[in-house]
Image 1 (tube, rainbow, N blue to C red):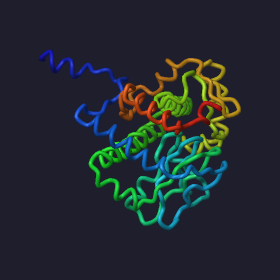
Image 2: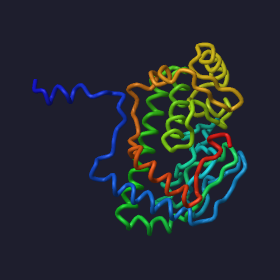
Image 3: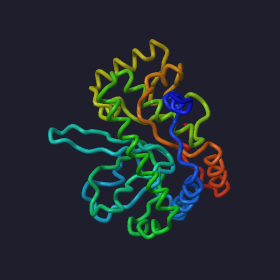
Image 4: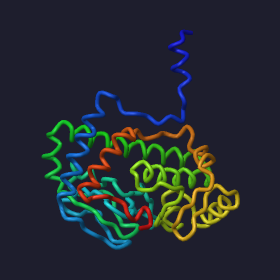
Length: 272
């Protein structure tokens, strides 16, 4: 076996995927243009449990969450709910509304949220720009990766691992966006909502959170998460699909531009 082949088979499975160098600059340009279009609109606010998008709404819009948390969900025929995706500050939601006549999922505020809204028709015009088109493609790919990760977690991991992976994912997203700098953050989800997201019962979530606290891995108390052992938390996620992200240096430049514009996102993530 050649040295090249050997090196390819020994890639670190924990290494996060990276975007191809040929597209990173276009992705950054597309990100700036897309975010600029949203932030040029007035910031709207919604209280906890308010519906941002209802099932069957005509002419659904696309949303950029600026602060607070939300989630996408669907209702089952027996009355139970499945939470499909936890939405954090900086996330776009409803990108599928670019092609749908009516939404097929509910989008609900998990806390008080600030958000910008853009009509799908306006966004369809914007994707004629190659950089914006490429960035939206990357956002859709990221959504698919996160769905794959959740499906793998529910299909193959036990309750403790599912909860740890969920908490790690939220932590990594907030940290990567510069919204937190310590091993603690607000997570405005009830234990019932965690159960609806992870395919568990409320009793199972409660019991597992107590065990994780006793083992000094992570503490979740009154919707505040304190990570006590980040390495052990990451062990649970090894081998799961990961989302590619822009390099830290490029994201830092993005945050600087937004700070100068007075549009910093995600105060609620820090508890401010």
